[in-house]
Length: 347
Image 1 (cartoon, rainbow, N blue to C red):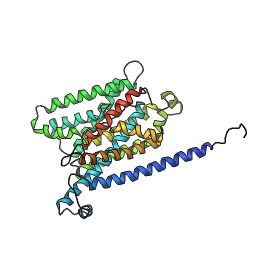
Image 2: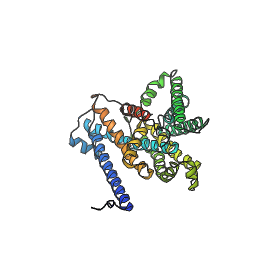
Image 3: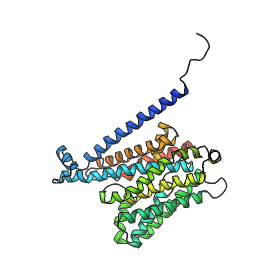
Image 4: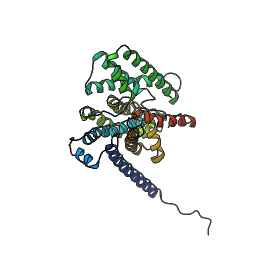
């Protein structure tokens, strides 16, 4: 045998094989989502017969079992939307800041949205889904600007470490202000505390529908920013050299993340760690190309939140564990693992 190297596949063939593998992975996630949706509708604190499930899906609520399934349907829809939105928002934030620790919860965005909603409830007596939405969007946007501004101070600009510290400080400050606002208001304390835990129980289509345009705008703008995020990943100087307006790219991608975080927090309350865990896992599967990473993150986030919600109904029967507690149990060790890897300078 000659000393020549063995022939390798052409580069184009390798790329095609990579796209095919990603396509198969995307289909697999879709199938997993369908399975989890079926589980979410059928599994709960109450056992329901298949006859009641079929009747409830067709719109009937004549028995307790049918009524239970009818309640689970909007809850399932909200879990899919919230999981996809938070996971994509995490991916967008990680791309904008080139910070592997970026997450709506860790960077204080959820806390800012929560504070704005609590202030709206306590001082302005807001009750409608639309009022919750606009309050949450304002709070999320303000927190995003504040954290990025504080994290940009000093030498080196907005480094991952400074952004993380600024986000943590903002989260603590907002949590303290929430307590200060709610403490003298016993009339709203119970409802606010329940909402602040974060979950999808009690969802109704009447409250979901007003949020859909904002979430849809967030998803569309976020996906449209994929190529811009790919350029930003090369560094600001090289991105600018390629003709990318770095400031505009960051603003537009951040706006999409604010839409997704604000809309989700208005409905569910703050749910942490989902935007941190899911993009990292998807990056291991599909690489750093945001054209694939963002849709994978959205589907995987919907799957993870649905699975967490179903698990929360099963492990504490006849009670329930809120989905935010399940995601925290998953996300906290994952966060520690990322920090211990000591690769937090940039993506």
